[in-house]
Amino acid sequence: MQCNLLLSLLVWLLEIILVAGFVSDEWARDIQAVEDKSLIAYFGVEKEAEIRQTSQHWFDQLFVNTGIRESVYRYFIPTEHERQLSRGFEEVGRHDLFPFIQSRLDVLWDTLYQMIKRFIMAWVWLPFLAVTLLPFAIDGLIRRKVSQTNFDYPSPMAHRYSLYVMLGAVYLLLMGLTLPFPVPPQAIPVGVFIVALALNVLLANTQKRV
Image (cartoon, rainbow, N blue to C red; front, side):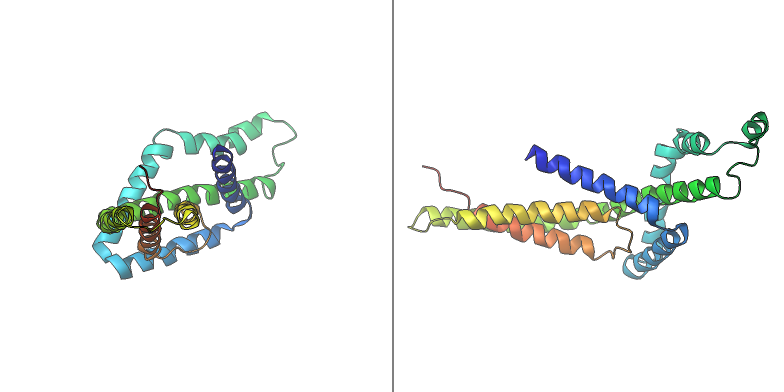
């Protein structure tokens, strides 16, 4: 299990690297624009503005106010003062290499901002998560209790694969935080419903205990 979790984390980090390395900054801005329109259409202007302001506040608190973003730019891109101190290398990479690096860093920071915004959007659905999971969990426990009173046997295969479905749905939602495509707001409740249904099957098919 630990090996699978580590592999999943590595795949997620690889996705971030690939997005930062190959997605254009224009494409990243288009993704944000499309998702903003989807949020406005689904939640309304006020809720979208609240999500956007909260996301910007978190981003500023984590990366801007701490100086992390500025330090990353300065680490990879020399300032004009540093260029002047490098005699004979003042123009090296000015019009090709360093603009390319800056565009990659811009995409990286846009991706991190979008990840935070998608997380905030998912957080908005938290009440829906509680309302959905509770009845499915109760129903699964009742079905298990009923099966203990008769000769029905829980299915180990259903138990195992429902767990896989739950983990897969959660992992896909995690991957969706950095997906280089617009993620509709409806993706969260659909994922929650899948997890709730899998939880119902998981609890109903938990092995009996004497």
